[in-house]
Image (cartoon, rainbow, N blue to C red; front, side, top):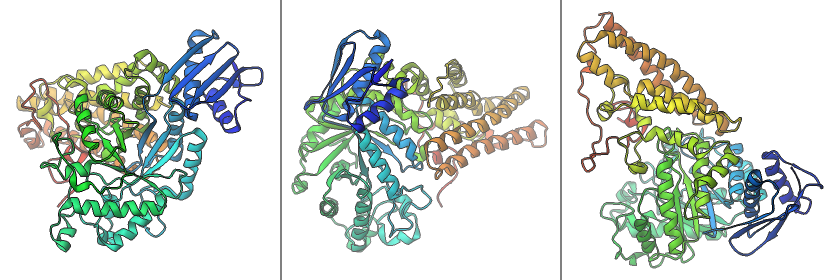
Length: 632
């Protein structure tokens, strides 16, 4: 099938031709005519009469979403005439890409995500950059972190404009700056190890540079200034200098300074809202304020400031409703940020992403929130590959048009853009969803991470899983992924990697439990069998490490890979050392293996739910040893 795009303007012609060629089609003047009509409402209308397809939409990305919808329809029904219509639930929709948590996404990877946004009708991409952009006066800012040059950001901005996608810089002007503040040269700037020392002239000059150099490469006049999770604001060096001050006042003064710098740069200011809530809460929490809470201390916050209510956690729409009502006491300029749950560990938590996005966006539609985006964090080292974003991103895009996501429609999008369908992606979700995890993984348990990283002999989580059959569970996942037909698409490497992870977990998930049980009854035949399993697993760990490296260098700049190299390498080294310990015992060269004489302990017991057997294991440093791996 051929298409005639000659009636489109040059940019739309170029992008439309690209998307058509991606789907295997060609363009010439004898093909089906593609026509675009710009409208003023949120409806995308696709009309096909057999010879011409007319796509009506308010935004350029509406044209590209309509084009993909058209291609889905004709792939099923052929060239029969039809009309289809979709109406967006929100005025602005976006994705936030984390480029700061160890992995700095490559320019090509970000372009790929921009194209995905355009294809599904998402018009904004926030680039979350803590210290990974260039500030000429600050040589330590982003050093060895893969920081983006001004030219790279301009290139991305230009590419986004071509695709009809607005790129928005998202930075930090208060907290979350520990990777920069770790340098001795920055000692005059920090209040605590990750919070800036506010109220100082040197800090103000630093923030001026942050805002200028983060915004300068972009066409947009929007900037997200962060300012979230600063729980110790005013309680570090600031406290020693000024004594205790009401922290709401400190926050207001700092916000006003940041706001006025942005206004000098003619920027619209967006910030996370949580500190206004945390400073009110007796627990420091974001979501536990009663509905009758008032914010009289904040009556003077700028009227045109946009506050982002972020909530990735709740499975009940009423909680989102309550928090939106509380936000309205502060401002009517409210954005909502949900979560794609790519930060749970080694594998994505699609179950929780689906549930929380559905409930959160339902509340936004009900309560008149017009601006929504979905965040994709990569906490604790970017262990989850970036392309796992695609499932949650496409699911989120569907929720931007429908209150319910139909599996058949979702599969059309997934197959079209990734080569795989929902059932395939949910195999990745299985890694952290064995029996004993709550429905929709409400607690964000991540057994695949802690069972992969924990020590074979000093298994901190062995007591948590001692009554499980996780080796059989991960064998089931392995077999299912092994049964998939590769698509020659960009997602193939992801599924190959997860197949190997499942293979490693077949041995490693219950290894510590089996070793202890066999050791305590002196079953040396079983210990010898487990040693053979460990030797086979060592080979699989090495292959897994190579697969992850290949993915990393395809998706990210090289900086940061050293962290995963150390972690995966550590898993292999500890397996090798454990094999040697076991061999010495079997050869009767040592009398005991003291590590296996330790009692297995439940790491975190849920005493409120008898059906909840697993847990959220935290970060890598909490999993690999009960010793002190990072501090004094």
